[in-house]
Image (cartoon, rainbow, N blue to C red; front, top):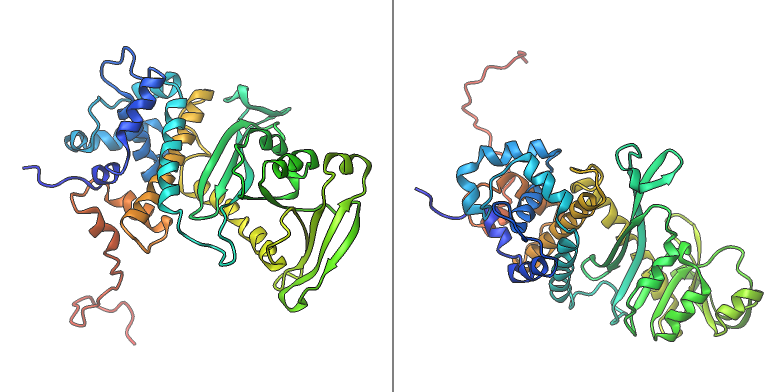
Length: 389
């Protein structure tokens, strides 16, 4: 007798399947499909991400071992390595990209009231990219160097809840600063970037769109100081200046005034210089904003360590993008689950627990909140001692 629902099915209940069906219809994902639908593909790939399956054969063996539970997990089609490979190869990756953005919209609403800096009420984003190395002989479309293949994952991370707001997958040769041209800028928001994005013409565009930026300055910056504000050296702020650029091209690209803040890290004693177009926030808050930029680095580290985005199940561009977008969807789904169930555990802990309990028929809230890790020893144990004391 089948009693209860699997943990996997309960987790998938948090997916807005009506949005997924719209994405499928938009790109005709199930056109002439008889057995293995787009939803079956999503669920199989999500299972592979949650349990860290290493290959298509691994996915096939694990799911077929639980064939009696697949129907109740929502998987209706037959599971085979060739079918899943064909779906990843030919089914449009934009289906899963659009669905990931739908999940991101849900997660952003859930984390909208979280705060990470007490003096900041505006939305803040961190922009950065990470390189994913690929074997050039297997992925010839991803040429990066003469004997090396790679793709880049450009991410705009909402610092409230560490939710990716914008993701772009490009070839490895694309310079980071060109992503600024593709952003849909939110007026009043802060964009925190490393000095790899320092392009004064593009920063001036952000300024004209009523957005704020915090970016690390280069050491060869040419400027003229207009005014110095008083600072408290005990906070780590060394100077807070209002400047104009004096370089020939830089002054034409950014003709307005800028704010220059120098800060020393108390732990590493490293001196950092920031440029900003906001003149109202305290200088220490500007430095704290840039420190929070590290969250995007932690996001890249997390998905590379705990999801499958460095080793791929297919070699085509469509298969690679499909796998990455489903991995992003799983990350956002875990974040949604954490917020809706009001869990105190980290995303890592939640994912690890789910990886071992997906086939169990236990309420998911009980699985994720039963954190009794204490071990009881029986004093009357009959086990003999190996060494006599």
